[in-house]
Amino acid sequence: MTTHAIAGGNSLRLHVEESGNPDGKPLLFIHGYSQCRLSWSKQTQSDLARDFRLVTMDIRGHGLSEKPRDEYGDPALWAQDVHAVIEVLGLREPVLVGWSYGGVIMSDYVAVHGEAAVGGTVWVDAVSRLGEPLVKDGFLGGDFVALIPGLFSEDATDSTNALRHFLRLCVHDEPSTEDLDFFLGFNTIVPPYVRQGLFARNVNNDEIVGRMRKPMLLVHGEADQIVSPRMCAHLEALAPHATVSMYPDVGHLPFWEAPERFNRELREFRSRV
Image 1 (cartoon, rainbow, N blue to C red):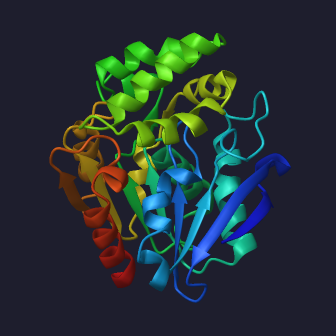
Image 2: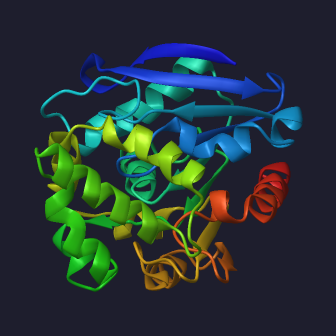
């Protein structure tokens, strides 16, 4: 594994790691809200590493990347973060794999830089909207929405309890203690002000998604209690050329709950793009 410190939008320091086959087709993984690059461990430590160049980034405010008080509302900054990783690492037509909030980050990138530099996109229980445009149409699970004030709390006990409930909602089956503690560890290092900053955005990138023409794979857990499967159907309507893969008895983490299937489908998609 090689680590990089890359200057993203406004020169914010992004922590990026790469592993796998340096000569393989690149996959750039973009994690979701309050998570980090370690979310993709079942991909980076799988046989995908034999054939593909695997790049994972901590998005701004998360993991080992810088965590400023603000700088979360401008879509151009998010676009520059992704662009900087592609350019600095010399990724040739990477496939972007965006989970949850990562869908908006991918579409922020496309809005500014277009699709020319990427081979395609994978939308993993991902969204094209944030804030009121997302909530008003019922694309978020009600139990998750009820937890949001706790995710913003500066009280350590309240924040940790909210995170535990959030992570439990993310998966269909009861998680192991090891898995829960693993995810809780990197969720708790995201400051509440960062979580609030990400949620403060009101975004509707539907028009951008509708203009995308590169290959797309839409992956969604049928039991997702964070982002309703209705969002996947919404994305499919915006991009009818996309391939759709629904996962029964899986929640918001198909890549963690059903890694063998996810990795196989990701391999097939990346190989043909």
